[in-house]
Length: 294
Ligand code: FE
Ligand code: FE
Ligand code: ZN
Image (tube, rainbow, N blue to C red):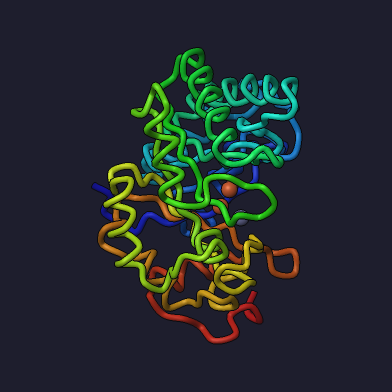
């Protein structure tokens, strides 16, 4: 059981400190967890693990009482495990995700967030079959126990995995259901059409369809767009269509106590907003016009 509010943000991993720098960045926001990419999310180049100061970062995490069970790695954007159109890209995606799970394990992390993919005109049913076959290959070969948390998507373009029902279908069809969980993204759920203001109702629905034991990560973002817009543009807490009150209630919800909440809100004037956003969520108190204080 986590004692503190499990809250963090996406953090960077850059030279010269790499993972040590990521952990320092999270600590500077007074976060209790963090999410990172093991390399640039938009390409497949990956630095060798031995250059990433992983041991130093892990030691600092431990020193600050941050539990590795709750840290999160995010998959690169370029993969599409549901690609039914290009076999070469599908094969490259399977290979990359297999390696990414091994890299995730090397950081001591246990949870890897993945966008289910895009059907590219082939339709969701065929895309789900392809995704499931890809996941089976990944889990057969990666040799780790890292869980993949399938993220709920906004339904932009040909994204699959927007509803609880479709994620449940993926989990049920997979040969390794014990390796699968879910990441709910508040911006994506709003943009797909869920009423995130009714969080109790949503969690009840999630529990009935998927089971709350599979809820591994919450991405806590406000949304620039109205419910059902299928857009996926994140906004800072209190500046969007969801609003601070709802996002704060989600962050502090008793049923989500042991689920890491991760901010993926935009920078403000090239500066990270996370220290202030985390402070407001911990205090459960909104600071009017807080962006002006960054
Ligand atoms: Fe994501
Ligand atoms: Fe997200
Ligand atoms: Zn998003």
